[in-house]
Length: 267
Image (cartoon, rainbow, N blue to C red):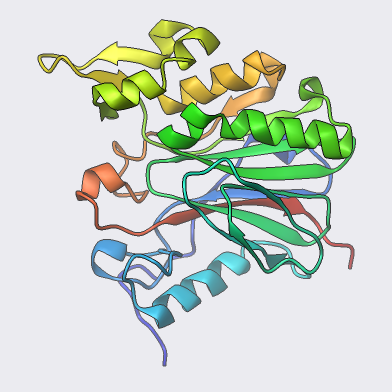
């Protein structure tokens, strides 16, 4: 069956200037346009777990696959807001429940699905290691990026100072109002980054607003990543809900966009 969704344009992709300079690296941060899904999932939804039509999701994945070079394939993971990090190889399929994927294999694209959470890429050019991390507030509070960095060091001898990091489109402090339980869970971020970058008071509510990308940037720098090697790519997803899926903007029912990173396969 052929699908004719509301937006048949080619998917748009953002890239990090620093990551683009790394030979052999493939990466991209997709938005919500360019797919065939409809309704709250319009249009490039790639999640099979949100209630979208299965055929539309398959077609959306086919379109995403066309964005990457030939000769490669996508690994997958079931994101559960954990600190589980999975290493995947050439025969990668589904890594199970995890929120970070790591590979040195050529032609394996590591995806992260988001709708306000932060997609984080960690790349070590010398050892040709790439990692894709899904970081919401739970993952940030539990230290998912630090755990991934530790694995890079333990398994591949990667020093944090040689890592290049990019944090893709996600909800920002302008829109991410949180309750006391989230603020308390993320309190360690105040020690990892300048407090004025991470926290703001939501006017009139007594609640906090938190900038997850600032929090994660502080954690990366605190773990030894050079500040000049951490890039923030793309807008706030809540502010740009016409271009990106946003859980906050939709009230809960929405799709997921995909970001991906990996090493080009030799043809």
